[in-house]
Amino acid sequence: MTALVVHPAERPLVGSIPVPSDAGIGHRALLFAAVAQGKSRLVSFSAVDGTLTTAACLRALGASIDSVGHDVIISGAGLGGLRAPERGVYCGASSTTMHLLCGLLATMPFRATLAGDGALSREAMTPLVTPLRRRGALVEGTGRDGEVTAPLAIEPLPDRRLLSRIEYESPAASADVKAAVLISGLRAEGATLFKEPTVSRDHTERLLDALGAPIRTFGTVVQLDPTAWDGHIAGFEFAIPGDLSAAAFLILAANLVPGSRVTARAVSVNPTRSGLLEIARDMGAGLTIEPQGERQGEPVAALHAWRAGLRAATIGGETVARANDDIPVACALAARAAGTSRVTFGDGELGAEAVRRRVAPLLGALRSFGVQCDERPGGVEIEGREGPLRAARIESGGDPSLAMTTAILALAADGPTRIEDAACIGSRYPKFVATLRALGARVDVESESESESG
Image (spheres, rainbow, N blue to C red):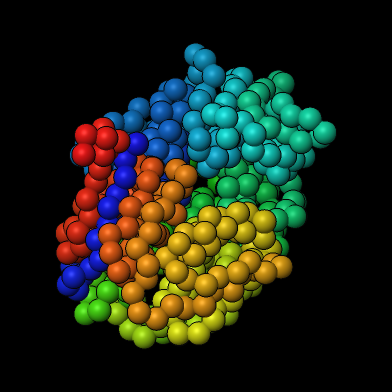
């Protein structure tokens, strides 16, 4: 196992840093490039576990995908040009991969099976297959008591029929379910109308619109009507914006260490997932957003962060849904804010229970740092701690968000903090340690063999 030993910051963190590109956008760009006509180039592609899995799956379906440094070149096969895989298509641990491919394969004239690892094979796929089945897709899974789980077997429609039109009202907001249904509508015989209770991440809609697909949005409703469309996506070039969830750790670090000034360059500030920026501003964080235009429909900005006096805030409603993966960072900001902050889980895209599960491990870590925090019905309360945090030993449990959040908090501790099982960080932010070091932090990496010999 790998551990990080993070030392208290002895000087300001200073620098202008690129962050890994947004993996959610990367998944979608890969898929649309694979079904485009001609060559596409994805610049600054983030080669992390999930996007690499999507690339491998698309190769298994006949797409030509080559890496050139941090760029990826894809020779598209056209919307109907993919071929039957020689064996089952393995989605690893990537739920997004399985969702997007299920929507695409439901339109194909061949049989395919989507499988995943233990955790993914237990994930409920009923929200995914329900709307696809309603429009005629032949998708079967395993599971019991009416719940569908992977592997998912997808059969071709008889007599080369197309999927039917659909008007579907989703009981929950889900960017991946929405994406799957919209993708299935690209080769349907009528319109796709998808409605959700709140607007989930809209990367799919923005990219489809930028690529000329017949898509329109009306608040929480998305419509895709291919009847007046030639069914072709031209090859494209896309410099994928930076991941706001990665930039969130830099914003946190700059606001914890006195005198710091840190810039995260070319970050996606898509309003459907930028709740953390609003939370930081509500808490008085040092933060400015410098717009830098759009890339394939995605708004991009440089984020400039510095140390400022944080104040407690109440965080809830749709802001929690739009903060998405960044709620642990919001809780870490609250741990250093003056007063008691309250985070209510609500019923956003992640769901109240999912948000609670994401935050719960961090609460234990905050207590280890000497921060008073309590779980309440529907949320948590965090009392900001003045002065240095207490140096701690943190068990990450293989959770990269927990490992990175606590590594940043450790910069404000009164001694070295050890974070166990830190190798998981590589799946989300491969250059995280190098980035902290480049900004001026002292971080040691220890392997199990090194700690035994020492």
